[in-house]
Amino acid sequence: MKVFMEIRCPDGRDGGRKDAFPATHEEIHPTGMLSVVASLTPWSDHNQSPRNMYQCQMAKQTMAFSLQALCNRADQKLYHLKTPQSPIVRTSAYKKYCIDEYPTGTNAIVAVLSYTGYDMEDAMILNKSSVDRGMFHGLIYQTETIDLSDQKSRSDRSRKFFRRSNINKNSSIDSDGLPYVGQTIKPNEELYSIHNEVTNESRSIKHKGSEPVIVDYVAIDGKKLLQKASIRFRHPRNPIIGDKFSSRHGQKGVCSQLWPDVDMPFSGVTGMRPDLIINPHAFPSRMTIAMLLESVAAKGGSLHGKYVDATPFANSKNVNEETPPQSKTLVDELGEMLNVKGFNYHGTEVMYSGVYGTELTCEIFMGPVYYQRLRHMVSDKYQVRSTGTIDQITHQPIKGRKRGGGIRFGEMERDSMLAHGAAYLLHDRLHTCSDYHIADVCSICGSILTTSFVKPERRVGRAVKGLPPIRASKKVICHACQTSRGMETVAMPYVFKYLAAELAAMNIKLTLQLNNAA
Ligand SMILES: [Zn+2]
Image 1 (cartoon, protein in one colour):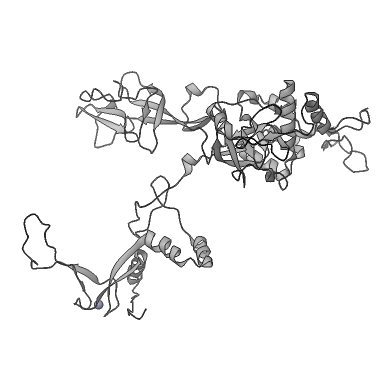
Image 2: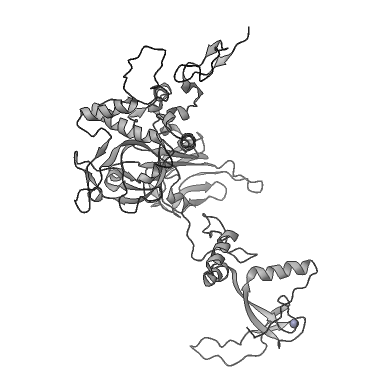
């Protein structure tokens, strides 16, 4: 006998096929097809499917409460949400997988409202007062492990261990050479101290990195000699403008403003102010109906003081079962919950402008939605540069955020500027602010590689006391022509000179023809 497994259609029927099931087994529940992450999205059967996929990606990027044994851990990098909450609207899988032990977000009061322009294009306005009360507060834990027995080199056989220098008594380091727990260490401040047994010298190591850190925990290893230590640092990461947030329906957004309570709109019924304002344009094209359902359900749930089950496919009525013909739909059920408590059936509320105190012309859809804080934060990503380190070969700015490098102005950006006719700006980006260089060119032979400075032999004048020494003007000659007669200066990108040198290495001569015709 062959064994066949049949998927279970949510309505309990044959899924449109007329023939009898060839199956010997059937799936217990339609949610059996969902992964752990996917099964946590409330009413995912009401969402457009790509949104559920986005949520599955984003659930892995949340800054959540990922561990219970934080105090004993030494992770390289760990994101941690300080004030997590249990979602009001949850699926059956939420309880099954014990996600309450590891919650991933906060129930935020969300108003769907176009308030000023600061919620356009997936930006969102956060209530600063809510943030001040602890909403979305988070941390990054980072652990640095130092093993001094590893650092022994063949030439240096001396033993090293942690110890504070005897000379520097009032340093910020403890007597064992390690930092105090709870101490804030700013960049370039002493972090720990190493003692060399042979030379009897102490050396302090400074904190690298560009932001201050808090010492969270210091763990030591080794009973006789203190040679191995793990220092766990704590970086506070409270919400600021530019941080990323998302609901459980693939609706991500970036905080654009942190507004105090008084500037937020307030409800005419309850006087409540939202924690978060998102733009209504986030819904028509994305069709995340489950997010609207979640908002209404969470509102009803919080009014009745109970959690609302949002398991997908659970509300589809099974025709095989004896159900009354006029059974309530999900929307009716949720709307009724609000109606009973005197709220609008559709979850909307009359609201007043926080700035003018006038009534808003439309009723506003407002309710709690479980929001996740995502681990992409501006303070870890922003890049700035005015001037700084340059590449030795090309004389162009280096790349890399950590090293204070620039952001590449590539071909596509160049094309865009050309299309706009912004020639001066293009010249500024690609030349003046990059590898601007004044090269000496010999107009006789046209070479830019054969020129060099010559030291003036005789003194130009006698030095006068109290005045800077008189310098002779620099003299440049062409080695090929053995004269300085044809020397001219030309502004060009430094890489052009490098190109000429590379071509010369391939036995190709590059010459410039200079004229003043312009
Ligand atoms: Zn020449």
